[in-house]
Image 1: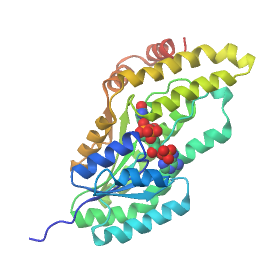
Image 2: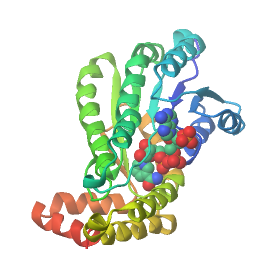
Image 3: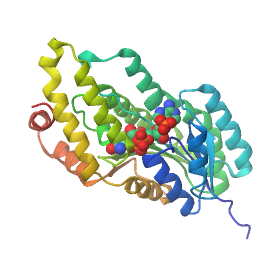
Amino acid sequence: MARRPQKTVLITGTSSGIGRASALALAEAGYRVYAGVRRDSDAQSVASLHNAISSLMLDVTKPGDIAAARATIETGCGAAGLYALINNAGHNYTAPFECTDMAKARALMETNFFGLCALTQSVLPALRQGAIAHRRRAKIVNIGSIGSLIGVPWEPYYHASKFALIGISESLRHEVMKQRISVSVVCPGGIKTPFISKSGAESAAVADRLSPAHRHLYAKGLSRFERLVRAVDQNGSPPEAVAKAILGLLAASHPPFRKIVGTDAWTMASLRWLLPRPVFHTLIRSIFAP
Ligand SMILES: NC(=O)c1ccc[n+]([C@@H]2O[C@H](COP(=O)([O-])OP(=O)(O)OC[C@H]3O[C@@H](n4cnc5c(N)ncnc54)[C@H](OP(=O)(O)O)[C@@H]3O)[C@@H](O)[C@H]2O)c1
């Protein structure tokens, strides 16, 4: 019997954190990995992790990068197609809604939402080919957040981007199910990655720049938020926990739509489902906006 071709995975945002840990875990599990980065130094660093990893210059907000990535995937995978796309690239933006810099909010949506959509749209033909070649559902895995299910104060546009990701993923899942492509969203809680230190530093910087009127309204909440974010550096799950969840989704014949990762995320999601909404919202405000 002819051997099945090696399965290829494209993952974005692999310079650090969840993306880097997942690229390595995927390669160690036997996948061939195209790892998206934005800098030459990161390209060398991620490719040096494992000989099954090839780096790819891929800023998801740049149509030229997306077209080049598609061409590389189609040439590199040929008839074997692409087995999985992991949309991991993302960043945060902390600021009270009233103090939002709209250019920053739009830039966030370009990466966390529109970039993800544009890349997915571009590689759907390669995923369809992957499903045929491997006689198995091809996979799209979008890295959401517990913030895709629960909105907390001080990063409203981050939550908007991650809630939007649930909507697009659910809709797309229905559209492509008959094409033997599954769509799942991973919803991690706090994960110890550079994302956390960047978010903590950003909240502190935003608090420093508040006008006197806004300081009166928002400084206390932002300072609480900064402390909570920094606590993830001690208590958060390792990025390998998300990598493990991704591996599980890629191995499953019928992957679930949503995969929650981390005890903190499970606790928050359970409280959200069990408590009456007003009680849950009071709890959220007591934690995040004293
Ligand atoms: N850490 C957490 O607690 C947590 C919790 C829930 C969900 N998440 C999600 O997990 C994902 C990965 O985050 P992380 O925690 O691993 O943080 P991270 O270490 O900061 O990694 C983010 C990655 O995204 C890349 N990226 C940012 N903008 C990009 C763009 N326009 N195009 C391509 N790549 C871009 C970054 O590349 P550069 O180095 O070039 O900027 C980096 O490789 C994000 O979607 C985040 O929202 C994180």
